[in-house]
Image (tube, rainbow, N blue to C red; front, side):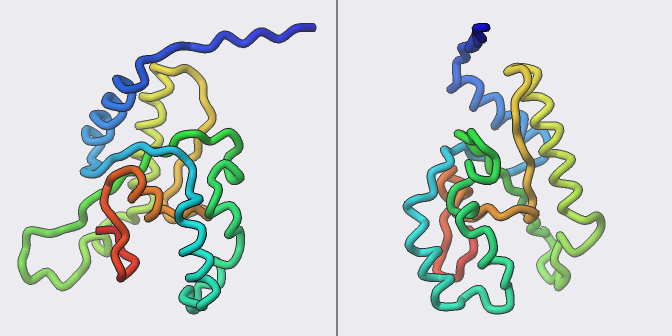
Length: 159
């Protein structure tokens, strides 16, 4: 028995631009696409763990190999779409963080990511994917930095 796989050919640049446009339509102010290679971040992450900078976050010690290699979490991962929402409020003296008000942002973002995946699948056909929002062992900030959304500052925050 012979299995033949027909590979679709896309204009990947145009598809990336379309994904960014859809992301903005879905309410994401920041969007970038990158490969899954985090080898440049491995030494700093391991140093961070060795210095116990994770504090009480013992979960950071678990699955650290998956955090450094997203393809171990979802086999055959080659591209990652990173998105972000600005929680900034125009009110100068708002002492309550915007994401602390209203709906749980995890479910809000996951629903939007599902809508984005549905739009991509309409163009590409079936694919394997997984949407994350603080829910899996991935290095979200380094991936966002690699995708061009910002950079990780000395305070470990994506700026």
